[in-house]
Image (tube, rainbow over all chains, first blue to last red; front, side):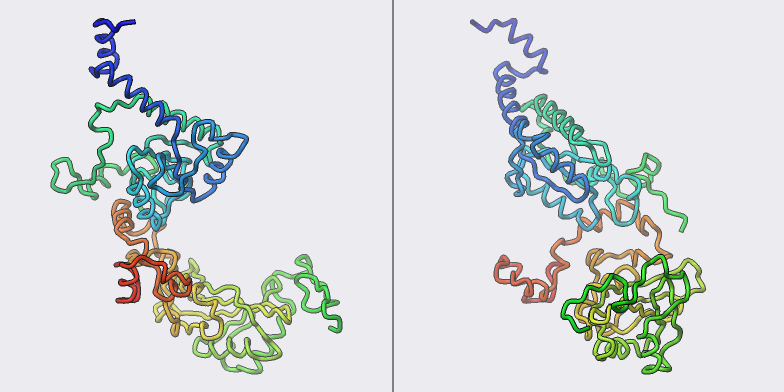
Length: 207
Length: 231
């Protein structure tokens, strides 16, 4: 069964110009990555209880290759932040994320980790962990049911299956560079993002 | 009590005196006998005795607080051997003074006593530390200092405990503290991310934990050089 020029052309069209062999290689790599995600559980609140329920036998995360909870960030693939993150924990979360090896992904589980949840819109709580680390999948809910988390994990697997090794921007980690022309100082970001939803709501209270 | 193990109902001052929350009036009622003993012992230092929901609050003078607590702890007729809480109250009414509250419990006599010190607005917010009597007051007083900014004179290590070292926005449970903090979100996040997570451990805490020898070399050197790690 030979590979015709026509098939190769079609593969280029479908996969954005990658050679046929690279797409097959990507498929193999992505398939193995997506089905052996080792989670780094970062549970701080009630979402962690639901996460434990997801990992236990009724919902059984082992079906997705996630039975091995990796409490060492260096051996983890996906960080699951379950629960609210206070500002005092922010440098800890950032450091754990930096200690994880590439390739790595993050799931923000629950309303607190995703946006601060509104009721925790106060002086002590980070308004969404996406202000600290990049997040791939947000799972809504307060807390989300295990089905919700598993749906988020399946979305992450779908995202991983669509990755292409030729994409140079995929694994690039960026720190804000103040000398860059694209850099916006924090006060400007504050002003721009003032009324855009709860997670970046900047208004002061009446007191 | 003759038998070594006599069952006493919760809330009863002594066997044979059943009290239940349903019978307790909101205000007034039988005060804790320790209040009378305090009046006899420290006549000038007792400003007022309140009985609310069956619990006795004694408002005492700031200067004699440590003597009073020590006497309550040591006296054979009182034996308040358990300090269950140290906290503070600030009311919305700007005329009312701040209150610092100590919750004492006497396990042998099954008594509960609440001591209060009133701190007038504008005066220096400081009270004596009860750490010399109750070693467990250490973290309670640190929390009270962190949240209300009340200084406890004589505390061995009065630092923040809930907020991180170097937190610059003030004391969050004060009424003049805005609920979202004083700084913008990005500034708060910047300051939080620049904090060293190890910086809140003191030399004493690490040595108590017997973990000093297991620490990495660089951290041990930093600890030996100064009192705290980082920053």
